[in-house]
Length: 332
Ligand SMILES: C[S@@+](CC[C@H](N)C(=O)[O-])C[C@H]1O[C@@H](n2cnc3c(N)ncnc32)[C@H](O)[C@@H]1O
Image 1: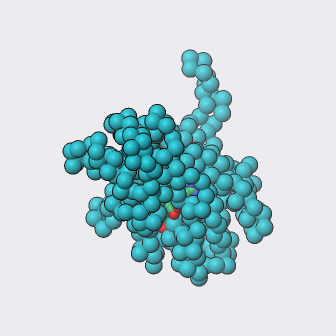
Image 2: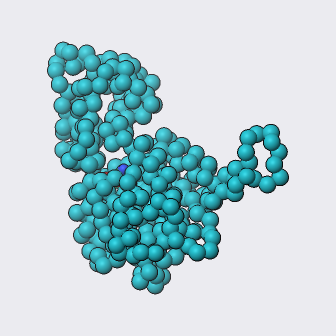
Image 3: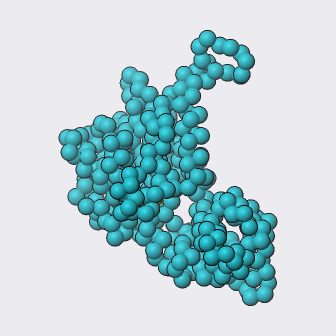
């Protein structure tokens, strides 16, 4: 049983059926409470593939690692859990593979993006405008700049830019202006409720307020954790790690992430026909990947009814084409 007190994983059945298709190394780049990892390991055992399989779980949050260690205790012999950033997937997976299972190809990589319920619901982590706490938002609790650093130090233009680009907030300039006025008049902004009050001072309509609060908090979270930078890196290096017929499955929760995944997968799965108008009979290069999901898989009504978080989830899957020989590719 997954630890649903910590986090209820979304589309578990869909993830397992699209990802677990043979023995090999499985990488869960967003371990969280270990719910998806547990389902992957159980599926490998059910199919009798456990002797030739191994799971590497990565999360930048040390609290997630200790939570998952308990949930996955029965599989300790066939798994390794690492605190780290999935942008470093090549180094992390390469190092463990070399020591623990040289020659075993990477069969599957899962990324279930964003934050866990535990992170959002813990007031001290500062992710939610609904909870009073320090304005922190770091998924890696011991490093890097916090949301408070950003709102107190960045200039008005840079703040407006992230509210607009990462939150798609229409009143980004006015909100950035209000942040800077608050700084001048009242000093440091240290808590979630101060930032919420600033947003409410600009957006007066109660329905709009909720949307703007969500967008501004999302924008700051993305900036604090460089979420899009990390996603770009893991898409590139992760797909480079896959062995023949290996798959990458990504669950995203907002349009910025989903667009990146869709475009990246689309490019990988397209043959190269050279410059437009050349009219070649054969492509210059055949794509090394194929799209498993042409449209994103979404959660069923039943799941959405039980887990509102599933409503915005989109699952996309890509597969590395097979070729004889079969080791993992260049990166790992
Ligand atoms: C939606 S939760 C994953 C939940 C997990 N699938 C489960 O079954 O419990 C996302 C997790 O990914 C982690 N995370 C997000 N971005 C990361 C990154 N760049 N590197 C490593 N971990 C990351 C977060 O700390 C969080 O624990």
